[in-house]
Length: 500
Image (cartoon, rainbow, N blue to C red):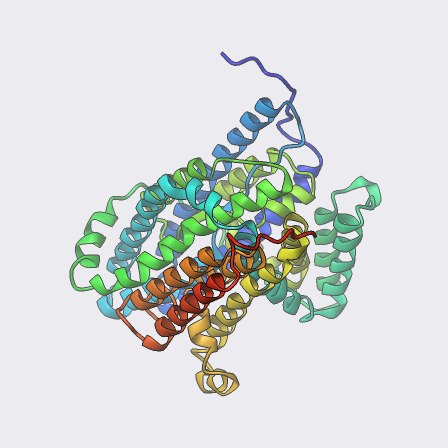
């Protein structure tokens, strides 16, 4: 038995802030899932009785394992300021599964039960891809420049998390501004709250009381929330087997959606692990990807249809000085909340502008950490790596409802947003290589981008050959240009000393 080197606490005060940040982030996704699926036509018996409990099983598995990994790292390095990785449903992946898998499956079958089974198969497939990806995760992490990896992640934080939730803050300015002020004072300036309460808890209490006291939210919301309370047991299922029969049969076209988004999911895991390494806690990307894949498959065995991943909120929790307790608490609370239907109740009782400021903080911390973790000369690479997610945000939020408006802004928005993670990684890497005077690697990165564009992983709505040859040609032309630059004064010949 390995002797304990340090007394790494199971729980500490800062874990409460970390818990609320992670819980609210996961809760927001759970609510979106429930609202979207019910709106599509899935019955509450499937949504609250199968999908939400299945996701909770996956979340518990990952939270507990990452708490274990945190303790192992604490013992290995002899320190107690280790923060466990956050774990939950990826927001971009969730939207793809909602509208690229669950929606089409229901439209094709006309049967919510059968469509749910297709979702189970799709989720299980995503777990398999993550497990396979684990064998190359550490190599990719060492090969790609940190600025490109963290820059792409910062794009997600700036748009989908910090940016969008900042919009929500302004929906109820009296409430949102008050809560955000508490979060800024307590979590950014690190000032003590009254009664020494954790800042997140104090903010939620004040915000919720104000929302009902000022009439911003009807008191009937509480009664409506309580109506969802019940017992929703965790029931194992092998429905994914039947789902695979349809997924590999009449709905085989969905594989063209699932493969790239599944690859994206394991890259997101890898990027978030790298982000935590930049903040001081260096975990194995391979082990994390393997855990994520197993967690996804486990969730599908209990009804879950959405892949999980190491979450972007990890760095926010690190900034809060959380340990491992917040992770275990999040998994346990979601299990209980899903079992008794409390997830739906909380989502109706606590208004979004009350919880939004906590997620704004997560977005702020992720973007700030990115710039703190890379050399100053690589800042341009971080910025360009963020841009594709601006396109992806506009595409996913507005293109279906207002496609003509989006096209009038620019016809490049949608293709930029398609495969945004790949685009961010590649453009960030290219800029790093050019800054570091390595034109050969810049050319290789451009050629790899040409391959991704040619096969539909980027700049295409699905996997297909040469959806738009102009993107392929553009990347090839760039590669040739970089090789020409190399020939006339490139990397091996003029290794400039680059100072920050």
